[in-house]
Image 1 (cartoon, helix red, strand yellow):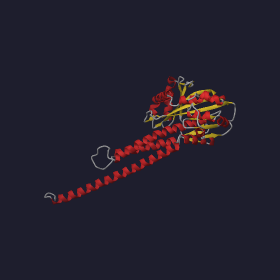
Image 2: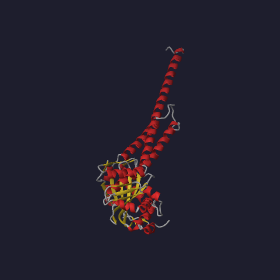
Image 3: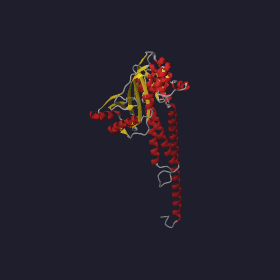
Image 4: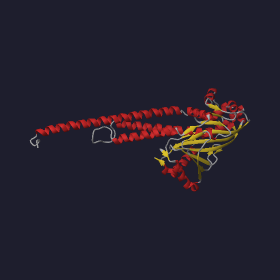
Length: 379
C-alpha cells in the first residue's frame, strides 16, 4: 500500500489544511447500574490524590436522564504513529453502568496525513490498554456506588475527526465533495486508493446544516466539520456506548436462554419432590430477565434530543452505520423469547404441583379407606 500522505499529495487532495482534534472513544460496561450522586461524592474524596476533576456532562441541544458524570484524568501522552494524545483522558460514567473513555489527538496540518492516523488508531493496543487501566482505576474509586461491579470484556472503539477550521475556507460540504476519496480513506483507516463505488458507499451517510456544519459517519470513524463540535461529538460517543451495551446485553440474553433451556431439560438442581423446576430456578430466570430489560430501557432512554433536527439526523445516521436498529430488534426478540419461556416454566411448575397435590389427595383417600377395614380402624 502507498503512504496516505504521498498518495493524497499526488492528486492535490493533501493541499487542504485542517485544525481540530481526533476524539478516540472506548466504551466499557462496569456494572448493572451506578448511583451517580454517590459516585460523585466518592470521586470528590480522592480527587486531589488521583489528580482528577469531575463535573456533570450537559449539552446544549440534548438531555441525559440523568446527566452522566464526566471525570478527567491527567495522563501522559500516548504515541499513535506520528501523532500523540494531548495527555488527558476523559471518563464519562453513565447511570446504566457504562463508561466511555476519550483520548484526544490534536490535529493541525494537511488532510492527507489523516488516513495514516486513522489506520494507526485501528485496534491500537496502547490506547486500549490505557483506556482499560483508566476504567479499572475509576471503578476502584466508585465501586461501592456500582451494582454488580466488574469491567466487562466487551469494548467498542470509535474515532471522531472533529475539524473546527480548514484552509481554504470553503463550505464544509464542498470540502467533503472535493476530497471525497481522501476522506473515505480516513474514515476507513485505509492507506491505499479506493474504488469510486467504495468511496460513494463510505460517504453515503452524511448530514449538513449550515455552511460550516456537516458530518460524515461510517462504522469505524466519523468526520465532523463544525466550529463548535461538542454536541455532535457527544451524540456519536453515545451511539458507540449504546453499541457496546447492546452487544453485552445480547450476550447476557444468550446466557438467560441457555439457563432456561437447562431448566426445561431438567438439568437443574436435584429435587426431593418431582414438581419440575424449583422456585430458585424460576427466581433466577426472572432476575436475569428483569436485569436485561432494565438495561435495555436504561440505554435506549438515556439520551433525549431537544429541538435540533441536525443532531437527531446525525444520531440516526450513526445508529444506522453501527446497526443499532438490528441490535435492538435482536435484543427485543430475545427478551420476548425469555419472557415466553419464563411463563412456560411457571405454568409447567404449576401443573406439576397440581398433579402432586392430586396424587396426595388420592393417596390420603385410599389410606383412609384401608384404615376403615383394619381391626383397629374403627377406633
